[in-house]
Image (cartoon, rainbow, N blue to C red; front, side):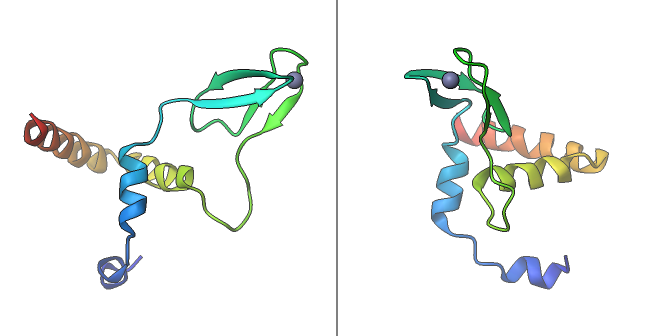
Length: 96
Ligand SMILES: [Zn+2]
């Protein structure tokens, strides 16, 4: 993506808040019971009936998990990992 396109993107404040407060697990209800799975799982298997449950859509509509996946994909670049670690340290110090 060209830099000028990236710079002109409107990023809604709601998205930033949602990422910042994103839960580290996902609750799934089935068979009258609730169980938890990782937040990025595409599927879960109900521990009661064994049914495989689809958790994420594969439609053209993006979900917040797709934002995380895009960041994780970016972080697969070793240089991006270095940048991300440095930025995390700055944010952590700023929060203290
Ligand atoms: Zn079930």
